[in-house]
Structure formats: C-alpha cells, structure tokens
Image (tube, rainbow over all chains, first blue to last red; front, side, top):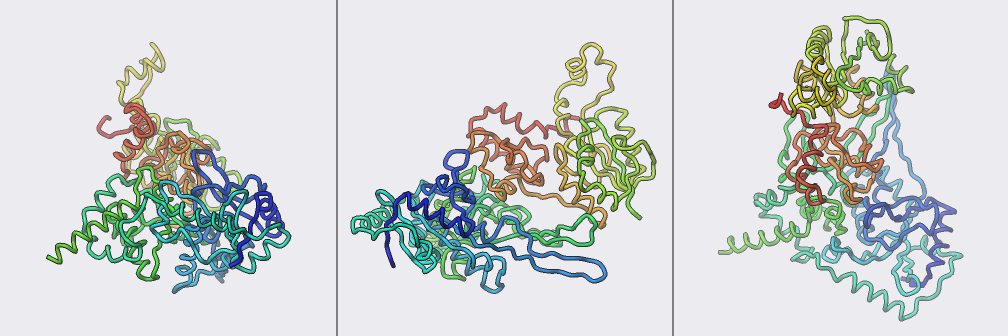
Length: 349
Length: 245
C-alpha cells in the first residue's frame, strides 16, 4: 500500500486529467437540505467531496435505473440481439459503504447467472474513493463497512490541507501520473487514523456483532414486530430503490407502434411494492405490508448473508434517510436481536 | 380489420382528447393501428358503429347521463380517459355543496337555467372496461394502451405510488425541499412529471389500490399542514365518493 499526499488544487487537476480520457461522475449538491447525487462532472470545482450520502447509490452506473437489454424483430423470421451499452467511466468520490455494496453485487450478479451488462460496465469502471464522517443515519461502523480493502483504485482521506491518497492498483498509480503528490508525512498518516476513529463513533448501532446477525433471524418469522414496524409503511418502495445492494428488476416489453418489433427493458423494482410477489394466476405471496417488510429484512440480513457470507446491507442509511415515515433498519434489527434473545431464554428454560 | 375508435367528451376541459392530437410524431403510427371514426375535436364525420369509445370528462348533467348510455350501447369497449372520466376529477369537488348553491356561485341569478347534477366518473354511470388516469393523460401511457388493446390485451396500470418513479429519476423528494406531495399514495404512470418539474403531486391519477392514508395524513401534518389543508390535498382530484351522490 502506497500512501501519498495531495492538496486540493491537485485533486481538481486529477479530476480534470481523468476527464480527458473518460466520463467522470462525482457527487454534486442538489436542491434541498443535505441532498447530493452522482452526476457527470463538467466543471471539477462543482464536485462536492464533503457529502454524507447521495439520493441513489453509484450502483446506477453499473445497473441503470432503466436499461434496454434486448432488441427484437417479430414476424416471419424473428430476430433478437442483446444490447450491452458500456463505456469507460471513473466514479470519483465514492464512500466505503458504496464500494462495499458494489463488491457485494459483483458476487450476486455473477453467481449462477452472469449478468453481462453489469460485468461489461464494471470492467470499464475505475473508482476513486473518499472517506467521510457519518450523519445520524449511517451505521457503517456496525455493519463493518466503515473501511473496505478492495474495489477501488485510489482512496482519499481528508487531512489538513488536502488528502492522503492510498494507491491501491496500477490503474490508480497511472491516474496520478502528472499529478503533483508528496509522500504522506507521519503526521498525516496519524490524521488518517484519527479520521477513522472519529468515523467509528456512531450512536446509530446494532446490539450485536454483525457476524451473528443471521442467527437472530431463526425464531422471529412470526413475531409481531413486523406488523408493528410496518404499520406506518407506505409500501412505496423507496427503501429498496435507494439501496446500494438491491438488485431486483422488472422486465417490460416496449413494442414499437407498428407492433413488428421492439425492445426489452428492465427497471429497478422493489420487494416492498404490493404486486412484487404476485404470480401469473393472481395469488400474492406477500399481500400484507408486514410480510413484505419481513421479507426485505430476511433477505438482506439472513438469506443473502448466509448464502454469500456477508450482509447485503452496507449501513449507508439511505433507506431511512429517504423514508418519509422514518422506518429505520437499526431499531428493527435491534428488536429482532432482543426478540431472539427472549426466545433463547424460553427455549433454554 | 382495424378497430374503429371514437373519442367523446363530457364535462371537463377536453384536454385529454387534445393530448391524443398532441401525439404528433406518433399519430400516423396510431392511424396504422386503428381507424378513427368519430371525434368532434378532430373531424366532422360521424358514425354509430364503434369498437372502442374513448371518453373524457365527468358525467355531470342529465343530458350527459343519456348520452353516455347511448355511447355504451353502440361501443364494444368504453375506455375512460383522464381524471374527470376516471375519478370525477376536479369536477367532483362541487358534490359536497348543494347543486342550487353551486349554480348560484358560478353563474349568479341565471344559474337556475343550467342542468347540473353531482359530477360522477364514467364508471359510476355505465360499465367501463378500462380507465386511463391523469390530468391530462400521459401520452406514453396512452400509446401503450392503444398498442395493448390492438393486441387484444387489456392494458394494466402500475399499482405502485409516484415515489417509485421519482426514485428511478433520482428526484430529490419534494418534502425535503419544503413542499407537499400526494405521491406516496397516488398511482404512478406519469413518470412523476410534477415532482420532476419541482412541484408536489396533486393526485390527479387517483389512489393506488391500498394507500396508507393514515400514514400520509400524519406525514403531511408532521411537515406542517393543518387538518383542513391535509383534507384539501386529499380531495383536490379525489373527492368523489359514491355515498355523497
């Protein structure tokens, strides 16, 4: 691991030089209080590296909110061809939680079925991470995602006068060619450690070690806690749609007006929406809000966790930050933990 | 044989019929799929041999009741288009007043001459096969519905709220910009057009099947609306209630 130091002017120069060779996307301030989103950089000075969270995660660049993936012609001799649109891209200013989530999805998107569109985009993606300090919704310290060890080329940690840069890959090394950097001083390295210590101080936290989380789900499927927490839920899907680790999509046919061909499109879907689990014959396996809320939690903290050995939640807090009725995963998970402890006592008695 | 389509207008601004005419780039394509056989806004010919009747406007006069029944008899499918035809729309706001009072307020002493009854959605008067919501209708949704009808499929509306489309567009939630929105309980399909242009959703597409109205009342109150203002937001496009008519 190489640690360099870079000042603010050099960061702007770095963005500018990356813009010469690829599309660069980075956080930008939006209208409204504490709202940001990843957008294409047109002016490096407009990039906002001190931000807490974007509305949508950078996942949208590997898995767009809406994407054409098949073009077809009908009629006498039907034809179909896949559409894979990918371009070189630099994600600049990505937080550890979002890098963790992209790494998670690399596993899920190439597991049994390899998603070629995801893979093509990820291959052409370079990532410059930046460290942050949590707001009241973040719980990355509990999820073990306050630091990441792979999935980026450069990683910036703010220190006095600029950033300490960790150069993680050869691609990262190349990015810094022609950019003035210095060797990080021991004082600066100490500041990096201090920054992480500060980041880890989070009030919003789980009542258990994250590695034990799936164990707590074994006895809570029939608990009343799901109904209690779902009572005020809109079933609007916002929590899933802003989630960096959600991958469900719906498939739509878009026929042309002549009805002789068209495109197949996928759009982000949400297991919290009423019709998500409705099947062709009309039955809905998760008709109640509480069943859908329960499913969402089981999937993130039990099913996928067990299958892949890591939580499919990165602790970014977007779900509660964007939820108008403040449905927060942390108190729900703590209720799950408390309930499973209660159950253990009963079973032990 | 192409389906024979007619367009009829009742109480409303007739803007939903106009929205069809505004599919300028697609109109020729539409005409390849269907024959338009009757439409007062676009042609002078007329007929009573109709496969699909597209109806905009609410039913708010005795004459309107007779006319929509006649249209129902001569059409194989009746499709309500737009908020007035779909939910009664803005017109139904008058229903909570007496008709005498309404006529007096709008027309003064000459109001007594007018034939007006409480405004109803088309489906409250005759059976309707499908309703295309919105004020006005969404062009993309209209074109999709026409394609689906021509393929022998009944179109399907999203049964999820506007929030879904806002998130897919990465709109900043209008509540976080200090405005109010009915989006969390209103049916999507408009591409979240109002929030995308910086305005809260007014609910013109009607409620989703199972809206959490209690939660929404609490949220509107939490963001500073009085009980009366909350009611106003709920009732602008969605005040029609069968029981009041």
